[in-house]
Amino acid sequence: MTVHAAWKRKLRNTVTGYLFLLPTLLVLGTFLFLPVFYSMYLSVHKVSLLGQVSYKWVGFDNFTRMAHDERAWIALKNTASFVLFVVPVQTAFAILLAVVLNAKLKFKNFFRVVFFVPTVTSSAVLTLIFMWIFNTNGLLNKILEAVGLHGYNWLGDPAVALKAIMMMNIWSTAPFFMVVFLAALQDIPDALYESAMLDGAGKWRQFWSITLPLLKPATFFTVVMGIIGTFQLFDQSYIFSAGSGGPNNSTLTVALLIYQYAFKNLDFGYASALAVVLAAVILIITLIQRRLFTEDKN
Image (cartoon, rainbow, N blue to C red; front, side):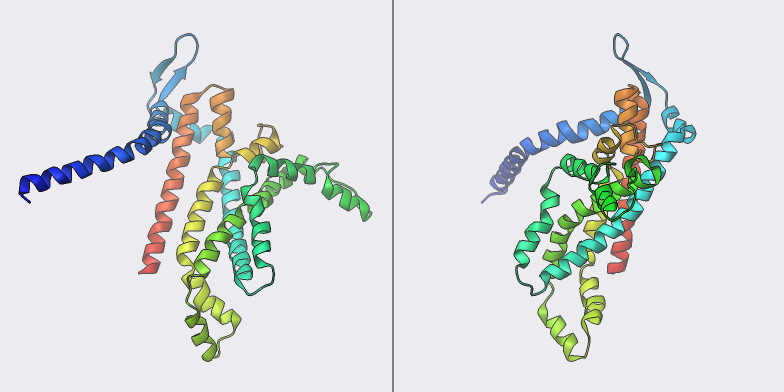
């Protein structure tokens, strides 16, 4: 085969490959990359929707405005608290479920299906179920009244509302990560545990010295995905508070605040600036985690 023929064949294969990728690239470009770049464009403009749509360049004014926005700081605090509590707990809970269901138990396939059901259930449905549980006339208060205690306005208490969303998120998300850890556990060679048993290592020693270290890649994945998901908390908070972030801004998250500024106040420039900052925070934390994981692996 001549050099010219080889070059033509390589070119044809390259063009064919990109043609196969074209539908995916068009979808990603339309629904991912274009909105991202447009949001960045809006973040440095003041958008007016009165009459003809107009864009006024304001530079970094939308970003500096955040420093004086009390609700932005409240939303950031709530989101950070949510992330710091939910991610470690749901990761540990997922590992626990995976280890239990990986053991030699009867009906373990049945329990795997039962535990996984919340993951495939609509988030809106789960939120409504938890609202019914914590409602003043809900299941939790009925149980308290049955044992002679007074009911409580759980969803009306700022100290409880966000914690209820945390519980729901852990319960609905941990089973998905459980499947990830189950797959990782089944890749660990049995010979390692057999050697440890011969050396006199008990179950706890095997767990801390073999299971956990070999679960690090799966743990990295679940923590990163957990952080990305919890930073973008919106639907549960929106349904719980009817879009207000109440009571007393206790369920206000950054994603919900972005929605309020964009679609209630029609302040698309400032909302886009908040979205850009949120994306930057998620990206930075992910890169730091990847760096730490790589160093730990080396």
